[in-house]
Image (cartoon, rainbow, N blue to C red; front, side):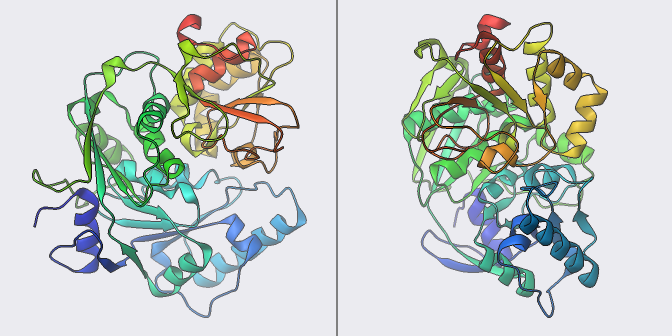
Length: 414
């Protein structure tokens, strides 16, 4: 039986020679990641857990605690980590958005299964990992048993050809895919092809992360030289990578010629069938611009933002908020001078957290406002008021638009 990447991982972790579309399989989970919200909302201290070495805790959504409820959740997380000997505990000071912390600390490994309560756990698919967000009750079960179940879905293969042009990022590639092909509900996404070599790791993670916005189950990349170099730098060794078989069966194979792409913007409400090249969008004044989130708060995103903003000023009437994805990213961006350039342009740099992305703290939008974001979602009410409009674009487009005061092509600011 020939299998796709995700089928191979699930078969291996289920102890089966092969799996087929429609099968329900029970698999061993290599890494179970808990986040602060789980401790603040529905936490019950377990009597035992399966394996503390396969558990990580990341304080990420509401850090430092903006409410008493969140503070109590932090206390519960610290108690749990101490009592069960959880060594991978990323508390305030070591914190960050969980998917960034997962990547930095080598928790997502090729050929393995990773679970977390956050819907964007598919981000780790950039590292050839079978990673998926699950409900709090299911993650609690994994914590105690070390296992979970999945139904094997059909896979859509995206074959990249050509080379990515300047100023076209992973966000733009994803927005093009989402606009052209729409939702991928109950489907796995697999990415490869000769053009993959032109897509750096940070952009692969953006693409994998955003699989959640089109309702995909898993979003998985293969291991090539680019990823192997990244894994070596992260200290990830002795892994068993998977590649799809040459005659694997797919629900569809779609070719994407990267050389034809340009920066994209998604209009408010959804990303599916709702994008447009930025060169063709109407002039739209913005009130807030946001650069951050698990999708686009990476170090390279901040480098690009600093490049666009250097020597310029944010337009009057525009608030530009920039949130590094982790404390590590924050420190590196400070050391390299990116934060200085961003702050000198008039932006506000916030603590590393999910914060404004999910409309919780540090920059929610009000009624009637227009926000251009590089975060994960442009859904109604996502970042604050249900009467606000949220457009989505790359960090370069957001930074360029913050300078102009309206949505604009970053190539015009290059």
